Amino acid sequence: MSGGRTGQSMFEKIKEKIPAWQDECGAAVAFQLDPFAVAIVTPVMQRAHSADFASNICFVDSTASCDADNHVLTFFLTSTVAGAIPLGVVITDSTSSASYIAGFTLLKSVMPCQSFGGPGYPSVFLTDDSDAERAALHTCWPDADQKLCLFHVPQAVWRWLWSEQHGIGKDDRQTLMAEFQRILYSATEMDATIAYDEAVNSETAVEYSSYQTYLEKWWERRQLWCLAWRNEQHRGNHTNNFAEITVRLYKDVVLCRAKAYNAVSLIDFTVQVLECYYRNRLRAFANGRLPAQRLLLDKLNTKGAYLTSCDQVTDCKDGKYEVPGADGTELYIVDSTLGCCSCRAGLTGKFCKHQSAIMRLFKAAFANAPGVTARARHAIASIAIGSDCPPVSFYRELQNDAVGEQCDSELSRVPSHNSSAAQQSNTATVMSHPGSEVVSTLRAEELNMMSPLLDEFHQLMSTNCARFAQDIECRKALQKAICRLRDVTTPSSFAAFLHGSGHRPYRSGTAIRVQPTALSRRRAGVTRGSKRLACGRPPCSSQRPSVKRRRCLAANVNANVPNATSH
Image (cartoon, rainbow, N blue to C red; front, side, top):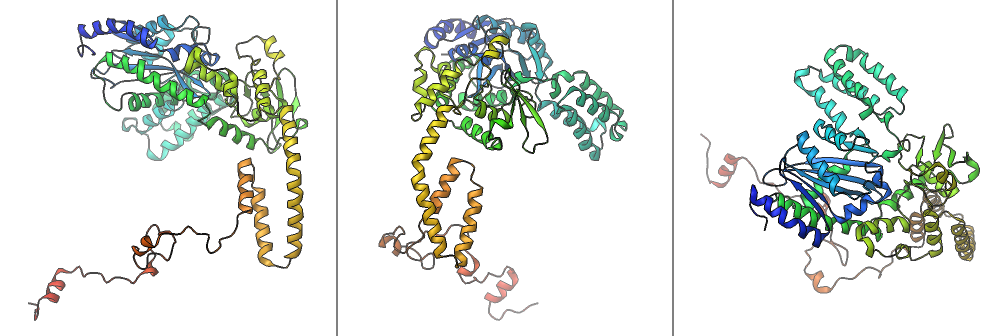
């Protein structure tokens, strides 16, 4: 039971159920009455605080309309290789600064001692442009930096431009928005300053003094939203999408798009249903059922396939490398200790194709690499399961166990970005990907196993090409096969090419037959024999055109009434 909907009976029910939530679910719950606030930290959230990635960036977002009293739920989340994991949930009675401060203070009291990976606060809070929320975060965690979501900032500017009271012409709105976006996505502070000077003094902006004043106010807060003032701690996350998705999941999966009875029900749903959802989701990733990270790594390796040798890269020592671009006109600096690259994609800590090439060629470890190793999946499983989590060997691949063991042993020595410089320099070139000598040996053995088949394939191809050299169709087919072979970039596409080359043409008698009773029930003209039924709209030539009924009512009446005359 949840007690009364509001009032003293609801507060008494919360006091009564706090020990039950702690004993049965292991969740830490604290609340106060004036102003009303509740802080929740479940076991998955507690274990997520102990991980290193919890110290990088924390997403904060609030939502309402979850219960009958419209209490405000605020989610704290961190980014991992398995997606976003919640670090805490706060329930308040409003979005005022006092309510936020009360809820965040309660959350600090129920968090583990080594919260946010150890320092007690994250490096960056990524939020929407809510003054009350940002002020409360600064009050409770003054040492953490705050940034704004790069989706909501241009959205606010676009709404300002479209507001009729500001008088911006329709033809000028897109121009002004494009000038603002050049400031927003500038890679360096100098580029951002130049873009601002051009935007505020452009021919279009000079016509609207109100827009110039509006842009100057945004420029005063440029450290919060401009991309040039962000570093590798963001790991490529510049929007609050993780929090937005979490809010949607909470309303869809946890509440099933129905409002809870009261705040007690919200706490109970969070402690049990939300906890169960994240536990199952993290276990699915640990068990290899979510292939997104592996597909991402394959995509980056394909983009960086132009780097085939270590001679193409300059090793600058201390974990830094000079990597040429694909066109050879630019040179990028990759720092494996920080997990960043000087290219536009990897400048703020996102894993890019240059970093994947360094990891593949030099066996370097990156803290921001996709979680495809057994140790990475074991780390996620330990958050989901806790002390009952199986060892790392349980999450290794069924094949190439030697490779997995060496990868995990090297990954265990990878330092976090908070480690000292001495530790980073000692472990700057450890391995975190199956691009090791063991892999090279295994691939050489597999190639030796394929050599007899490859020789036989070459011999048969040469013989058949000599026999049918004069046939035009064979020559066209060979040209098409060569074009398909040039497009092969992955093992799966090569296997598909080989399967397609060995596919036998259609022969009579190879189709799947249909029983005579089923054939007898088919309408005449639908299909012949055992062929599948045609889908979609039939072609015009398949049947005789039908005579359309005349739509003129008078003509139909005259046609049906004998000896009808017009008046």
